[in-house]
Length: 365
Image (cartoon, rainbow, N blue to C red; front, side, top):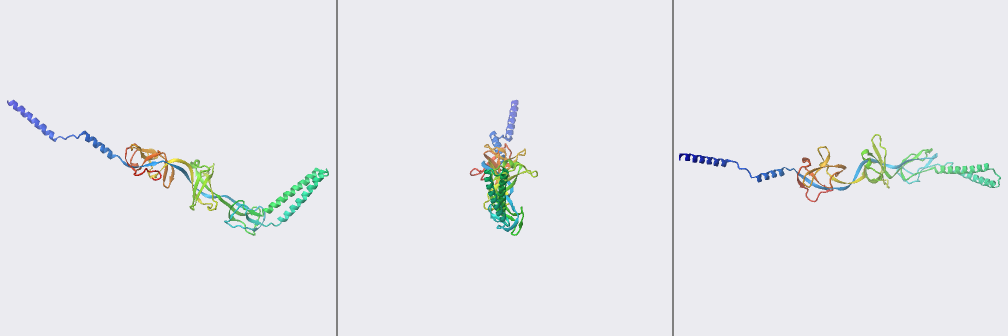
């Protein structure tokens, strides 16, 4: 009996210890709750970025050149015979047309020389007629006939020369233009080659510029051009000449652009900024602040795909404009990160905040 009592007491003490231990043990959390907490923590740690949708647009690319305006033609109109200036009906700045009188020289004895040459020609014609009649009768030798014919041609040539010298006493404009400089005045004695006036032709007007080696292949004759002068005049024209040999010092190629200037409103020598249209491409306009570099130092932009995963797009900057940079290398429609692009990496899934309202285009960014 005593043995049974001891056994019962031992069992009671063991049960009491087991009950006490179970009260103070930590209860494990349910598996479902642990997984939910882990997912919540992952979603919270995603970087939040702002995204705008951009659509590609047709863009006519341009090359910016710097040059200056120049006259199409520039001539020093000079005397071809000697004589004293008796008239100069033009002044500096006058517009003249081809054939208009610039300076007139004294005729002096040129009229007398003309009458003398006319008389010599008349005599030579009579002699030639008489010699021809004698030849028909076989009364004149062939040698004499040849002499008479030569005298007739000499008389004709002398008359033409005298008439030409008489005409040259009037120095006229060779083309339409503006009188830029006057070199003689009434009373001056002109010799052969003395300049009367400098005449410049401003319609059409030329713009002379130089193109760098990297851009020369984009410039072609016939390319449309817009230009703005230092006096804020807007010009429209086209490329009419592209040089084939570069300057040995600057390594640039000469280019000439022709623009109409019917009113002579634009002067020669004005500094001009020229925009030459070169090609048409599909491009996006973006803010330069969005450009970033990848690990290899390549310039590009960061966007997101349909799964909100960050994608790095290498781009080429084809034009810098006042309202942004035009780039190629993006998909036609792209979701571009506009805020937070420097804090995410390619392949990372991000929390996207879309731009509200209608999709943003390159024109409204």
